[in-house]
Image (cartoon, rainbow, N blue to C red; front, side):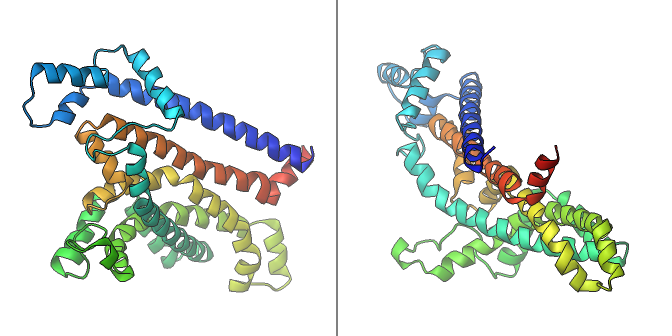
Length: 330
């Protein structure tokens, strides 16, 4: 099949899969919320006392007494028009809330994703090169401990040690309190970002390190590496020439496949550090019955995770030469 036709077919399948995913996610999420005890009218009113007439108008506006199927069709129709509704908490369009919060979350997740990938890859290479030694056992123990560590617990420990006890970093938020946006410096933002990003990246190290270790051990025991050893290649030069280039692409692919864990971890980290991102908005929407915002975050998270899987699939389909070789031999 020509490359152009292959690309078109691949893109068509992925678009169809995205549309199907969004339809299912939207329907299931909407119905779960409809049959939950969440009351949008009570969330909107809060502690205010309103008359029964005013309450009835709000119920009519929010469609409380409308059948769930009809409400879903109305909501889905508005979504197709780009109208995600109005957030009950922030009193502004959901799209604007997500747009405002997304940048902070993207900076946090991108920083931790990059750091965890680089550190995990290096640790995996070191462990694979020193299989069976105390270095290998130490790295494996470190990874096992990290894999078993709850995200919120690690965040609280780092917060108590480095913010409360030592005072090296701010306790929370993404900018200093009481400082206007135009007066916030780049250093201020970095200082508030370090602990949340460190927490999220440390937890992402374990998976990529253990995967890289296993792949490197597999590569180093392959026939062509044994042949290279017979020609006199050894040590770090052998790993650099034959190991890393065969391990790097699968490791990068695994990093993109971990977008779901990255987003889930960000939700907890942002809540502990009061970091104003998508995760904190999702928790606030769930606790305060902000249905429009909660559904908007669900759609955003589904697209975010799908993009990670799409990049991983694209790497395997078009970048990894071993996939093409396997197709040619079939």
